[in-house]
Image (tube, rainbow, N blue to C red; front, side):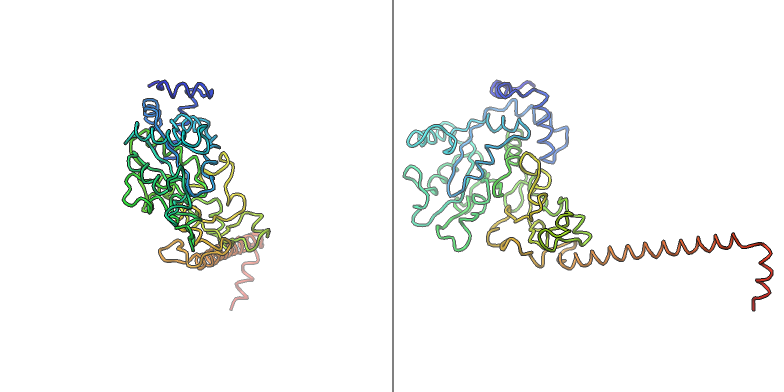
Length: 377
């Protein structure tokens, strides 16, 4: 199926070929943990889909998720997908301001009731009757409840929107809430936590929704399993060093330069679920642990309270077995590896001894055998 007019025009405008588009769909299928054969279905669905309407709301935030959105570049078609949606409202990037901007929001909600997507960035402050965050004379709480009431789906991008983030950290002076807490009972809510969200995951989510017209399978925290189904620890490039009990003991030591496990330096990878090791950041070039910095657990609920101090490791973290402790597992790993090497050395020693005896026996003269027998008791 050929792309519909809006997508075709967007592809041509960006200089993206049909082959590039299909390659992008194949990449999305991989990101969604779907078989490669799903790429054709994804391409057909996106091509036939009506141009989706997206309303992006910003509240108590640092705009980091918007910055992530604006840097979508791998693959190039991700930019097209994000650009090609009808972004009817986004305070940071839209040309309109003031009353015209708010009129655009109201008009879009009315014209596309039940069909638009809402993206919420930032926590929703409720203290002082919402006075900590007001737009056009209305509080963030009023706006988010009105906008999500008629949305086809709501996407909470970033940890602040998903869990409250830094604004909700104790003592939470502004009464900041997550989207789920601010709008109890909200249906079709999906959380994309991280500080900020990885735009690759947002792209994959939008493509999934356009393809299947439903949200992907979610975990208990409302996160898509394709991006948050495994822990950082599961796919970490330093996992082999953890298994061998090889840790960085201090910044800049030999282990740090070699690429040893960062668990003792505060890495929260074992208790953090996200696909950072696979998708990576900055156009897929690297990620924090790849750069030698431990994971701080930014995709988990209440990470500012639970994961700090960031450079102190968490004791009692589940390891290989249920209820096992990573500290003990690490020591066990050292013992197991040491025992394995010791056993290997003993086997080699026995083999070399046997070979040496055989060689010595072969070199002895044949007439020596009777003399040996005579000397025997």
